[in-house]
Structures are given as structure tokens and as C-alpha cells.
Length: 517
Image (cartoon, rainbow, N blue to C red; front, side, top):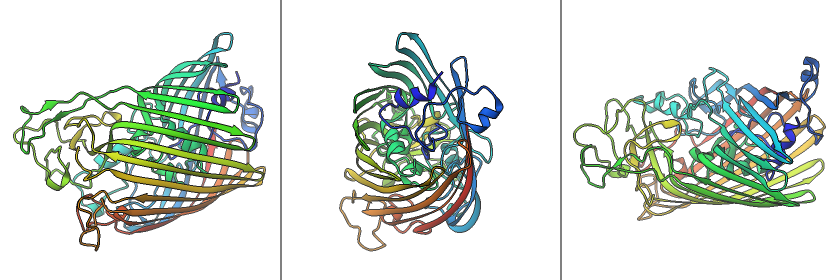
């Protein structure tokens, strides 16, 4: 069974297959050079010496283990739920340290995929893959990095973040469908967003956590929020004809919308249950001409959630309040809480619209990459309430539906090049830049006393790394990343002046190895 050929030309026919992530792709490994699709392994020696697949009865087992060591100039303690390392600047990073650095080039994990022909040139397809934290062996769970810090003083936090992988048994993709050589591929289930596919194809670092901002931070891939790099209950269609390919995707509403009231003071008895409105849709149009390829991706997501806790203290044991209003004037619920306060999150809710344009050009031995995304976020047209569900089924005990004083605009740019020093060694240089416009009314962002997260700001990251393959399955790498923030992007807590990042930059050299099968 030539499954690798299907993976490149079927479900992801448009995207020129990469991995990832920090949004992490589990297609391990990338070939050193273009070659025929590998066959199923017939012996242990063949498994060690080639890139044959572990396929039995049409089902392929695949995965990889990626781990290393690093140093960060401004870091914080790790915890067993984290799976992205600390190469990127973190608002709570406060001291230099050596650390175990997992998932530097691709997400550690395992998966099963299959393709079976049921009639001439028509196939049933399936994929199930999940990410694992190499240090602890636990399922990747960014939501738990927040809840485990609830109630702690900020200086005592271990690493925190937000993400689509939230402890689900299958936290990457879980879908099935049909594929036709002529008519394309139609799948349904939990799937990577079209923006995630594009980032993995057009990021010079392939979405690597340690060397790529758009891989480590899912804002770009998710069209505004990192939880939206993967869509549950989504239908996805891809087709390619000649040099042109097209994709479309729609997400059905799921989960709970929670209990909401616009009243300044309210109780569990007076709030109204909200239906789930978290629908989303997207389109991708692209093509390839000789050594040049490009894609344009549009995405719109209703009621996108960005998790903030524990920064606002909303779930602190000493402040057990629940809120659905802007954090400037948070109001507690009177009487009994709508939901329990244990193991819950605090989220900002927005409607997001994003347009991405990305391209790459191959001029042997160098590949050039570039991209741009424009993201617009607005307060949701349909509010969520306390008790609403986020990724992984986590419950929101604090919700902000009017966080934005005016629409928020974010722009992301990236450029890079990958140089093939020899058939086994690549060198990659990348630059990532983010611009945030003012979204505060009135716009009073002059001076440190008035500076808020709603003020304009910038972010930059530069990275360089070398990757050498000893075999097709085993490679080692070494590199360095430097990231820096300024303005509103350097404020750690929204709507609270004078609470900036502990440090505005971070330097992170990393070395490691990866085994893929």
C-alpha cells in the first residue's frame, strides 16, 4: 500500500506536505530529497535503513519522538503538561535556566492512517493522531498548564499557554472520509484548519516550536486564536486539477454556550442558557507553476476563545468569582455559582476573520518562503456565558464578550530560506514579525502609566538552525532563536496598566534529536 503517496496527493493534495509543529504535524519524517513513495517494511533491517512504512492490512502506524536540551535567557519552570518548550518569549519568563526542550522540530506523537480502495479509483480514508509530552508521557494538554497554576502568585508560575491540544485522547486529528483520484477528498471529524495546513507548507521552519513563531504560537494558523488550529465536527474538501488546487471547510456548532446575562448583577436562576454558535468556515485557492507555488486562505470563526487565566486571577481560590463582562468592570454572580470553580478557565471571546497569502520558490539548493496574514477580531455577535466549553471540554468560569473597545487588527509577516548544504544537511534562516493596532477607545497609549494590552505593539523573532539526517529516520539539529516584544504586546495582563512582561526579549539556543517512523 503506497500510503505516503495518498497523504501527499489526497487529503493534503494542495499543500505540498510538510511538518510541523508547533502546530505540529505528525507526517514523519520529511524526505531528504524527492523520491518515490516508500513501500511497507518487510524486515527490521529495512525499517532501520529506509523510509518504508509500518503498514499492515492497509493500516499504517506512524509517529516520532523529538527531544533536546536548551537554555533560555528568561524562562520559568516546566510542568508535565507542557509540550512546546520555552524558545519563544513568555510574559511570565523571569530567569535564565537550562531545560529539557521537547518537540523542537516536530510534535512527539503517534497515529494511525489508512486508505482502502472500495471501487476503481475511489478510496475510504482515515486518520487518528495524538501528541504526547516527551518528558512526562502525558497527552499534550495546554489547558492544564493554566489550571495547574490557578491561585499561585505570578512569579511562581510554571510554563503556561493556550492551544487546541487540551488533553483529548486524540488531540491532533480524528477524521474519516472518501477520496477520488478525479474528484478530490471529502472528510469529516476533528481536522486541522486550512490556515494550519498553509502554515505547515509555507513556513520556512515547518512550524517547528523552537524556531518558528507561527508554529509555536497558533494565532496565524488559527486565524486569530491558537485554539482554532484544529476544528471539531468539521467537514473538509480538497481537490486538485493540473496546477490549481482548491479547499473548503465548514465547522458545525458543538459544545455548550453556557449561561449568560447582560445584567450587572445576576444569579444562576436569572441567566439564560446560550446555544453553541461556534461555527466556522474557510476557503483555500492555490497553485503551482514550475518551482513556484502560492496559496490564498480565508477563514472566519464565530465565538473563538482565547484563554487568559491564570493572569486575571479569576479562578484564584481567594477570589472565587465568575464573570461574563469586560475585565475593566468584572461583576460577580450573586448567589450560587453557575459552575464549579475547580479546573476551569477564563476566556476572551471574539469573532475572527483572517486572510493569508503565502508563497515559496525553489532555486536549488535554496528554497525561499514568505507570507502575510491580516486578522480582524470583533466582540462576538452571539455571546458565550459562564459554563461554555472550550477545547478539550474545559469549562469557562469567566467569560469576556465585550473585551474589545473597537475591532482589533493584527498583521503577521514572515520571510525565510532553507539551504541544502548537502543531501543530508539543511540550514534554515527565518524572520517573523507581528503588528498590533490600537483597539482602545479613547486611544490614550502614551506613557507607561497609560499603556495597555489594547495599545499598538510589535513582535519580532529571528531564528537559525542546522538539521542533519544520519538516516531517513534519525536526524539531529542545533540552532538559536531570539524574540522581542514592544508596546501593547509587552503588557502581560489586559486592561491593567503597569503590569508588563517581566522581560521584553528572550534568547534560546537549542540542540536535540528526532526519531521518526
